[in-house]
Amino acid sequence: MNFKVPKGTQDILPGQSEKWQYVERVIRDLCEKYRYNEIRTPMFESTELFQRGVGDTTDIVQKEMYTFTDKGNRSLTLRPEGTASAVRAYVEHKMFGQADQPVKLYYTGPMFRYERQQAGRYRQFVQFGVEAIGSADPAIDAEVMALAMDVYTTLGLSDLKLVINSLGDKDTRDAHRSALIEHFTPVVGELCSDCQSRLEKNPLRILDCKVDAKHPAMATAPALTNYLTDSSAEYFTKVKQYLDVLGISYEVDPNLVRGLDYYNHTAFEIMITGEGFGSITTLCGGGRYNGLVEDIGGPESPGIGFALSIERLLLALEAKNIELATGNNLEMYVVAMGEEAKLKAVELVSSFRAKGISADMDYLDRKMKAQMKAADRANAKFVIVLGESELEEQAVNVKTMETGDQTKVEFGQLVQYVLENK
Ligand code: ATP
Ligand code: MG
Image (cartoon, rainbow, N blue to C red; front, side, top):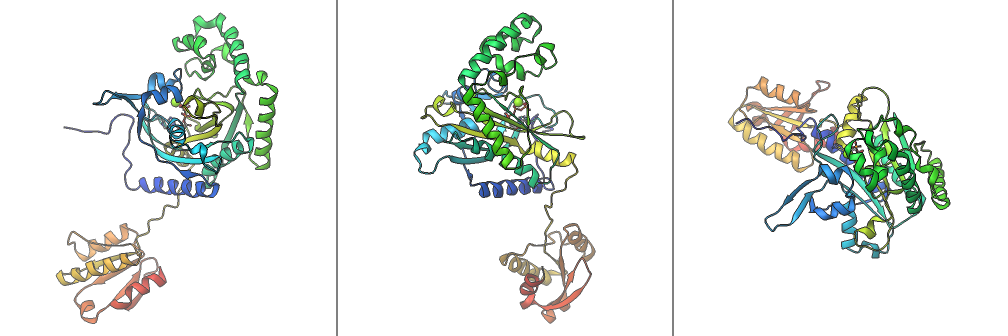
C-alpha cells in the first residue's frame, strides 16, 4: 500500500504550520480591530443552499461541488464558499433582529471545490472571509476593502492592486444583459459550449469565461459601466470617495465581473503584481450582494463581503521572499545525564512549563553531545546540564546559548531566573 493525500489537497507539516498560525493570528487581530466577530458554520450544508446562494449558472455549482447523499437520503454538499452559510445562519438565527447593525462576521476554514489542480488552486483550501450584513452604506464597502488590503499589507506585501467595478442594480443588469445578448449572438458559434448556454441563462458570465478570454468579441463587449442607473452611479462614486479618504488606491476595471451570481453594485478583487507569481494573480475577491438574504428566505438585508485563501496568501509571501517572524521560541532545554538526573529533569521541565516557559528534554536516552545538538536544533535560548554534581549541589549552570555566558543558579531559583532573563 502506498497512500498519498487526495489530489488537490495537502498536508501542512510543522515548519509550515507555524506560518499558518501566524497568518491566522494576524487575521484574528485585524478582525478584532475592525469589530468583525467570528462565525463557525458546518463544513457541509444542504445542496440546495448553494444552488440558490451561489447560483445555478456558476462554475462552482455546475462543475465544482462535492455533493453526496447521506444515509438519510439527503443531498448534502461540502461547502465551496462561506457566504451562503453565513447568510443562512444570519436568517436562521434572526440576526437581522439584533440591535447592532450591520452584523459584521468573519470566518476561516476549509472550502471544497472539484477543480483542476495547479499552483494556488486546490480542492481543499482555507478561506478567510468577512460579511457585513444589514447596511447599504457605501462606507461599509470601503471598510470591507480596507480590511482585506490590511491583511496583506500587515503581512508585508506591497505590490498589490485593488481592482473595483460596479455591477449596478437590477435595472442596470437588465439593460446590460440585453446589450450582451445582442453583442454575442452573431458570434455565439465561435464560443465554448459553456458560453453558448450562458448566452441565454446569464450572459454576464461570458465575460468571466477562462476559455474564451481571448476571443475578439470579449474586448469589444458592452461594458456594464455604461449602463449604470443614476443611483448606481452615485453609489459607486461614493464608494470611491470613501476609498480616497482611506488613502487606498484602486483601479476601475469595467470588465471585472465576479464568479458568483449574487453580486450587485460593488465588485472587487485584489491582485498581486510583479514577478514571481505565475499565472494566478488574484488573491482575494468580494462584492455586494443586496438580494441574497431575501433569496435565502430572510428579510431584505443588504450585504457585502470578501473571501481570500490562505494558500494564495502564503504563495504570494513566498514569491515576494517575505519571511514571517514566526519565531522558534524554545526557551529552555534540559540535558540530563543518568537516571537520577532524568527524574529531576522531568520535574524541572514541568515546573518551567507551569510558569509559561517553553521547555523540552531528551526522551531517547541520548549521550550528552546528542542532547546538546538537539538543544541547538530547537534553537533553545537556555540550556542546563544535570549530572551527579548538580544534584549534589542543588544548583546548575544556566547557559545562554547565544552568548555562551553561564550563570550558576540554585534549583529553587531557576524558574525565577529564566523568567527574569528570557
Ligand atoms: P478563480 O477565478 O481564481 O477561480 P474564484 O472567483 O473562484 O477565483 P472566489 O470564489 O471569489 O474565487 O474565492 C475568493 C478567493 O478564494 C480567490 O480570490 C482565491 O484567493 C481563493 N480561491 C478560490 N478558489 C481557490 C482554490 N481552488 N484554491 C485556493 N484558493 C482559492
Ligand atoms: Mg474559481
